[in-house]
Amino acid sequence: MLLCPSLNVAQPARRWYARGLVCLVLVLSALAGPAQSLPFRFTNERLHRLKRPFVLQRNLIVLTASLNGKGPYNFLLDTGVGISLITDPSLRDELKLRVGQRFRVAGAGSEAALEAFHTDSVRVELPGVVGPNIPFLVLSEDVLNLSNYVGTTIHGILGYDLFRSFVVTVRPAEASLIFSDPAHYRKPLSQRWAHLPLELEGSKTYITTPVSLSDSLTLPLKLILDTGAGHALSIETTSDPRLVLPPQRLRTQLGRGLNGFINGYLGRVAAIQLGRYRLKTLLTSFPDADNVALRAGVPRNGNIGFELLKRFDMVINYDKNYLLLRPNALFREPFEHDMCGFELLATGPDYRRYVIVQVQPGSPAALAGLRSDDELVFINMAPSNSLTLTQVSRVFHSADGRQIMLVVRRADGELYIAKIQLKRQI
Image (tube, rainbow, N blue to C red; front, side, top):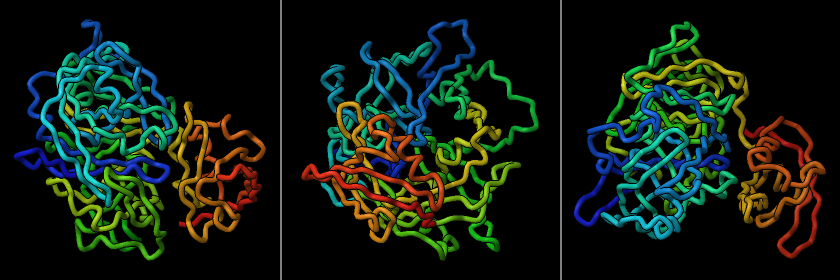
């Protein structure tokens, strides 16, 4: 995404919210500005530690917060954004937001640029935590359609300001966060925790770690730490001539950017080393070169997302510049792609209507006669509206060769029965 104010050009930025994942990269260091005081604090000044639950939806952390005393609103928690975002434009009038500097926002895709504006002095409250004066960038249109991809209403994204205020411990298997006062935080002594240095450049954090592209080639790659990316790993082949596409790969639509869809390939790398822990046969996105041409000014090779990170309990410490990782109950889950071959969007007032928006040619879904605009009615005799989008997605990622029976409603109202055999395509 490229932000172009009336006089200056801010740092370019991108993130992908990929097909079943959502991915958008935002680097807005120019707006975030230097840290003078911590933007968030505990509402009880005697507290040094606070534990809060979150909801994990399609590999994304969803938190509830109130803004200017109204809400609750749902926000993604994302280390990949330099300034927090309001993606639902209806909040502008509802919260009586002050309109500041305006931007034209352009990015990957062919659609027209949209307008956004900067606003400040927004009071953000999470249970037990308050940010009295938080700046936001407000989009004029909800072009990311995060609610449809996540399957629940999403109003925006919280990022850098929250992470620089606290040491944040993320426990994905139990869906909980712990906010700790940096001045009182003590690093755990257990040897099970792997320690990785964090590089904080602008308002984004990076790790540099060995990635085995194949059995014969291992390179140290600089990767954005990106809790707001639903994929496991993304590699930009334009960042180093030694980074090439894997021989076995799947051409696919990786996701939606601010101005259109982002295309590329899915493949696998042999392994990634994270401290003492090694993860093998990692599903990896390789976006097309023209989708990453407008990269952030800080050189990097890609990003590491929550499909990988969720396998660890994490301690993210911006104050001391380190990341701690400890395997959790999700550690041994395989890295799998959708084995059906269609893309779903959640619609309806409760996001429990699931409509096919794209069918991959030659996929099990295509061979079973499924089409765009088909609406799922039953999945293996269970009403589809009894399942969350996350649960539906798990069915189609479940096992190579598994038989699935679907009942879909066609655009003309006719019901159609499809028998699908899942197939691992990559």
